[in-house]
Image 1 (cartoon, rainbow, N blue to C red):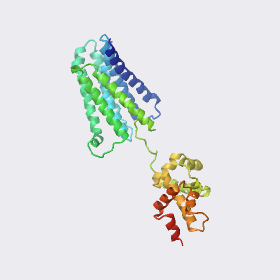
Image 2 (cartoon, rainbow, N blue to C red):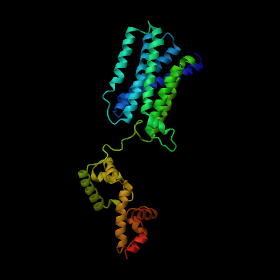
Image 3 (tube, rainbow, N blue to C red):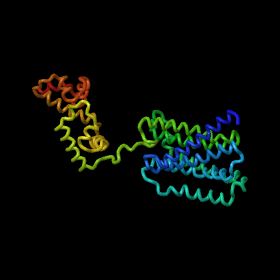
Image 4 (cartoon, rainbow, N blue to C red):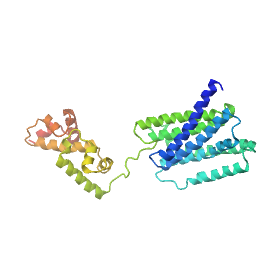
Length: 345
């Protein structure tokens, strides 16, 4: 084996084995126990089996016939798992009929393997069974493409911005399509084309994963902002009163470095609960919410006989700069602090 062949072997084999390890990660070690993650694990598993078989068969024609049959049979599940993963990512409900895409196909290919073992009926496998599997794989690619049609349309619409999860799903779809194409043009180029296609696509997707994780998002899943979009009205009213009392009595808004987490700790609630309440029940960000308290205090001081200058009032109320105080005051009240003070005379 010369240097070129060694490099091809290493690159293609590593893609297959890394795909296998990543499959095990999603199946057993991923923090998110979601149906979509299990489908992604299964998709990587069957792809890796197919790729590993291709790599070793390319470099060793005396490879075990059983292993060749297993590798070819795994292809029958690539299309179904691609489709199931795609629908699971965008569906809010857990699919209970997913097995209809898996079990019948698996039973058929197992039955064919028993009736027509590869080592005894190689011609039947090459000319009929494998071609039938590739047709089935293509059909699922088409179905997946149809389910991704609204997203794919965005690629041709000017100023249309794709979400991260949409970019990821298009990458998966295109990647699997390229791998299918690689195997089908193999007879006209090289048998190893499909394996190399997988390794190339795999490493591109891994790079995307690393990039995504640096942005503190979960693995290729559009983060659910909150568990429930809106706190019930009865709970919200009670919580709002408690929040108002704590902020006013302790004058938390006067702390220019106050954070949402600090107030959540005072209320003894998770920070995401407070954030959910502000965003979904009050329709405000934390900065706007806390600044409203600061402006109310500033208005009280401006309207009275205060010993503070206008600038000092801003600092007293919790603003960390004169410009921020003036800008925020006008944004909330519609007038500058000086204009407001003059109106009180």
